[in-house]
Image (tube, rainbow, N blue to C red):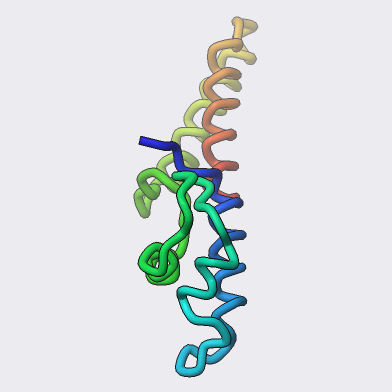
Length: 117
């Protein structure tokens, strides 16, 4: 099975198709067949786009792949981050090595940044 292109490529193709359709869905500027001819080959399969494929792209806009985060994921990560920061602070006060705590804080911070993006 061929790989799907990056999200940015799929979004650009979707936006181009929607621009060709025009602002009024009742009076499209171009038909699905005309759009398929204008776009040429499908970058995913290498075959010419068909009318049906253009309709599928219109019906289902591209979105990022993968499972969406659970609703409370950010809160959970913030609580974990607070816990690890307290542990690091406690170890620093005792003069102990905090490299493990630092790595956990770095990983949790990266996860939070990814969710906030």
